Image 1 (cartoon, protein in one colour):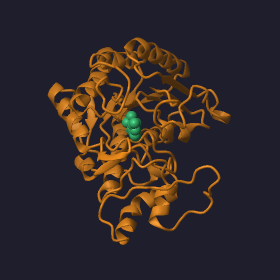
Image 2 (cartoon, rainbow, N blue to C red):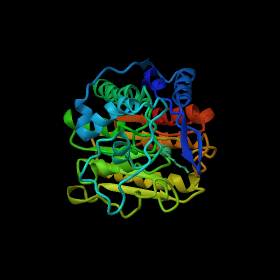
Image 3 (spheres, helix red, strand yellow):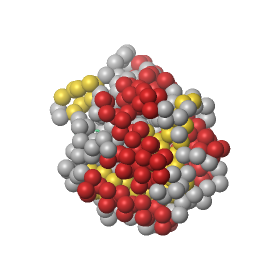
Length: 344
Ligand code: OKP
Ligand code: ZN
């Protein structure tokens, strides 16, 4: 399988995140993608190529123009305040507060365009997130040109980013951008399967009213897990999108004995939808040793995951999302891809 990768992700390296009430080094760190790349090489998965520039247009098919402009300008606005450490949001417009006036000050903008504090903006963030989206879009190009499934080794991840807000380590929604680009290139229906441990709230919200994108997500139950405010089983879509959104909230401690059947159910729904292609939001933070997650999947379970997805027989674009057990992230991600290839 072909991998798309760029070193540009190194330009985004947040210093710290607020977790459990203290500042800790960011779990979402450059070594994550380095380890996946190393495993791709080690296993001889296939060629590795650089992305090409796709411009802003495909981003603006999914994201709000004001939000994209904010992402581009945030670091320089922050610096203009005389600050040279990472930018972080610290105030949000919750119930009853106004969202009809967009603040002009950088602290107000950071809050307006985010839903949590897990999104440091650094000097290189804009370039890194643009590159990450280019990785996904170049993966799509390769998949369409060859008819073969492709791995977009994106970093930073994207699935928590909505049309006009960042959060959960995510800025631009790489999977959504690729799915929309596929439709714009002539696909009639695209399915997005999100196997990251956390609910893909951004992707869900982007396509919630749409019937041309089916979204399915297996994740920690939002009643007890981040992102808490979306991802319940009764979220089925709205309007033309009704019936095209499927959430599988799963309990803490979920292992393959419960994950496997949920995945099989999701795959059945994908098969029934009969999409032209599949995008997989590939997070491997479902791993038993993940430092911020509570599922119990083992290394070999990722081979089974890949086999289940491969059995669909669809052209598939894998888009890297989460996974924070850095020692195992490469093994687990590539196990999915190898399992997929063993049946596809
Ligand atoms: C990004 B992706 C854990 C706090 C979680 C944010 C997690 C973002 C995950 N107690 N903080 O979905 O892997
Ligand atoms: Zn995650």
